[in-house]
Image (cartoon, rainbow, N blue to C red; front, side, top):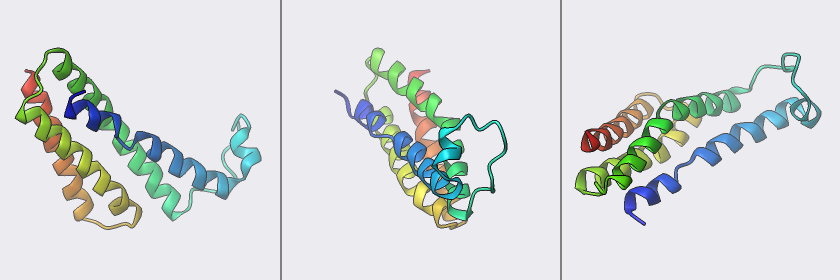
Length: 128
């Protein structure tokens, strides 16, 4: 397996799905989250849950592109230094981004997002 596929496999998507879900269950109760959620939640997300929900939404904006780019690069056998460094930058920047967002640290969070975008662009340009 290539390094790029390894980075893809280790993306934090599952963690970023579970963290806000657990926090919201703690805030709204199991019966609300287990139900059909036809009514609005009994209370808005707390500070940390809200940040994690927004971080999750942010990940889901770029993750499909990252998945597609890595899989296209793999199928086309383009595992080269650009795809490697791009995948590595995307992955580690996203790892750093999550706690920065959770703790509400501005500017560094934006910088981490920018680095992840640079990594994504590196992989995308390698397959063009």
